[in-house]
Amino acid sequence: MSLDFRPLTESDLDAMLDVRVRAFGPMSGSGAGLWRAVNTELIADGRQFGVFDGDQMAGCGKARGFEQAWHGRLVPMAGMAGITVLPEFRGRGVGTRLMRGLSEVSVARGEPISALYPATVPVYRHLGWELVGAQSRYALPAAQLRTLGGDTRLRRVGTDDIPELRELCAAALRGGRVSGPLLWPENEWLRRVTDAETFIYRADDGVVVYGWHGSDLLVHFLWGATESTLRSLWAVVGSGSSVAKTVHAYLSPDDPLFWLLPEEAGHEVEQHGWMLRILDVAAALTARGYPAGVDGSFTFSVADGQGDADAGGYRLTVGSGEGTVERTPAAQPEALRLTSRGLAALYAGRPLAAIKAAGLGSGGDSGAAELIDSVFATSTAYLTDYF
Picture 1 (tube, rainbow, N blue to C red):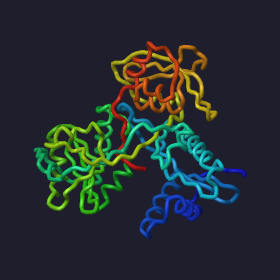
Picture 2: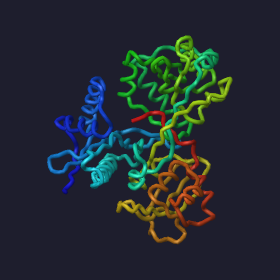
Picture 3: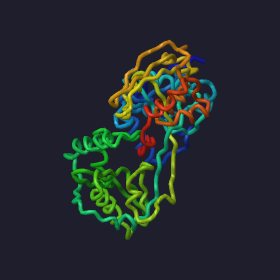
Picture 4: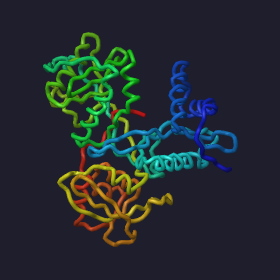
């Protein structure tokens, strides 16, 4: 069997839908229409690819382009999604060929890291991805939100607000030195602003995006720079408490809302884990942000097991919140040895001791462990968007 990887065209949509239905189940008429519209746009953007055995599509998937915050710096990220393989081709290397191809085109586009939500974990671990964070949806009592008050004046958002809102959100990610969230591109803001069922209000230093979720409300995004703005934004959502008893919200585990609520709110939390892979070691480490007060360097090697050109030795030097990378001989005795999974976990701020305990790293100068943890220290990695 000869497997070919290539970009898809609109003529492949019917075959893509067949693969999707056989992998994930049927869609309603309206769902299929939305699926076709979304994937037509991704095809036009050169983001959809397939693996073929001769003329037959054996599997397909997409690598969507995002900007993801890592300790406050925006790193180009490939969001792998819709990874599907026909039942009769499973276990024959189609998924591996697909993920390798998507990784290669992502690196060529200048996207040095990749994230995905796994339908199954072992397959992606075999290819170097590792669980590093979660998308958390909290169920909050609407009546409690209504009482938060706040005296910041809010107004509805229009299309003219989009450039300023995008810069406002980018500044929030940088200033908060957070890790994981995505910066919405202008077309995503436009889609939401022009959607009659999405409600968006803003202040000079904050914004909320929300809508109905059945008989409840769902907050897609909320950020405010001050206590007054936060209270006002949450209160406008909570003002629907006479109808909606519960507000669902995608939040960071460190969200300041939990300090504003009069009662503990984490009674119901739904989480979906997400995985990270470093596709281009030097570019990913150079693009990431680091704690401004940490200066130093250390050597490490990456043993991938997948034959990547990135396998080998490196020296990372950090200072003034930035990192530089150079290649080194892989056999240096003092070097920390990491698998691709271990490097992903370290990039996301996981403690080196835990990485070693899980068998994802070994060796290295014991005196450098605290420096390494300090270099990669960041907020809890999280996502609020599903892709």
